[in-house]
Length: 183
Picture: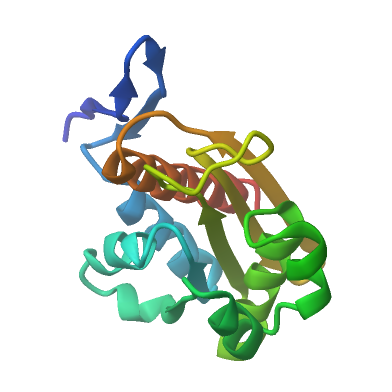
């Protein structure tokens, strides 16, 4: 069987190129993530705010994803972040919903509450309104939590609301993929 290199181009906006994902044998990043989760016998859970379930949607587009995906929480309102994910009120009051601290608590909370090995979370400002000078439209925070490991990354995306959501979901999957490759 010949190996085919394919390229999935991420969303571009204006002069900014958001990069590429290269996969072998035309395998999607979701498929590769599924193979890695299955190989390592790991369970994934997601907590999504600004992406509104897009990450879970992409993961479950793969047949057999029930072998490694437990589910997720769409925690759009702060009330859901508090009640369903265990984010602390003090964290939201001090740092806001779109912050490193909040997404770490979201990822940890979904991992612990759903009994997963890995929790993946995202929170951001998809626009077109809602941004401030400190937290502009397009700002997203993504976090990954597993036993003994927690990290968070910020990104500032450009484009429409739909493009920002797509870019945030894509980046979350990329970061999960990188983490799983390092195991």
